[in-house]
Image 1 (cartoon, rainbow, N blue to C red):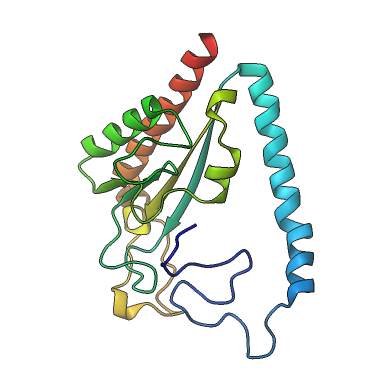
Image 2: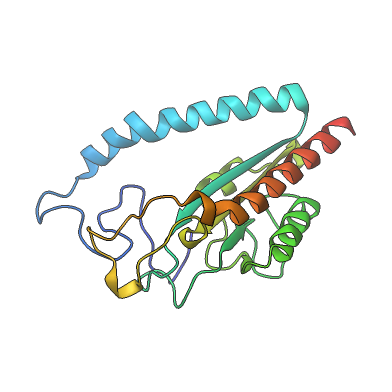
Length: 200
């Protein structure tokens, strides 16, 4: 998905900090990866595809909102501090979106901008497999990814102080309130878009 940049595979062997997840020689082989894919990945995506089909048949237009979060500073994956909101629509920065109608992503992007928190559209995270795979604009399925920097809802340790004792930190509801407010607006905008398109 991200040529020339560090990333993880279907079955990661390292953390986002490039630390091994397995003892040497104990990494999952192709057979084990296939078993995990059949046990976890495929049933999840079969269920997701079934729900998208069901909703599409009932309403006409569906928005798939693929939500993630990640630490604000991960030098192995990106330089500096990640924006608070990372909207991914599977398009090059500044180019038309490919996973959803620009009318939807324009509204979402504007809500992120007026939040006063940092944001980017199709920056480091442009939308992963879910966003790209399920999108079918002509068929009424619009997909977008939202990658949140964790600092919006928890107090992150300093980048050089991240270890098993300091991370992860708990949710702070009061600290998260502004983020939750903006996310509620975003989800309402997605619902309004789908409702209006379905009615049309």
